Length: 214
Image (cartoon, rainbow, N blue to C red; front, side, top):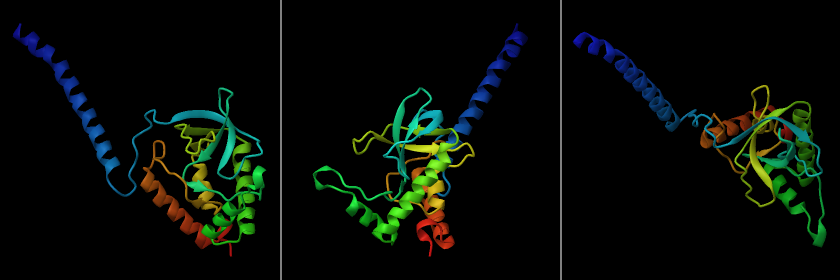
């Protein structure tokens, strides 16, 4: 009977060892996420809703950093990219004597160009996003954050080639790093992502791309 009891205890010991190994892996992941450098955010855990197979939707309000998309369930929503601000793509006037001219002038000053040049870059950014998203499906990650109450929700857009749309825009010199940032889904934490974007911006300036041309 004693031999049987000893034999029966082995499965319990093995399970305990496996559980301990898994615990150590989780602790290591947490430590890596907490240190500096290229630290990683926690793996995708439901914080962001993920929508695969999204499609571009033409809309008069589409711009380089905000645009309409059709979700897999048929809903059409307007998204605003994290981290980046593209210049307005046109001078516009609204009711009551309002217009976007001062905003464009402010964007131009921030980028070191004239208002007219800022709009040109806005047009190029809008076309780039249309061409990038218009021909294929893509994946959207969002928390449905609507900071301005205009039903334009912050989001990350992941491309089939593995790239992020906001990074593409920075690399091509079409945007400034200006708006709200967040941890990248399954990737870099917010601060590390901003550092990466700043490095991409420096490279774009050195190469004379987009708004940094000349």
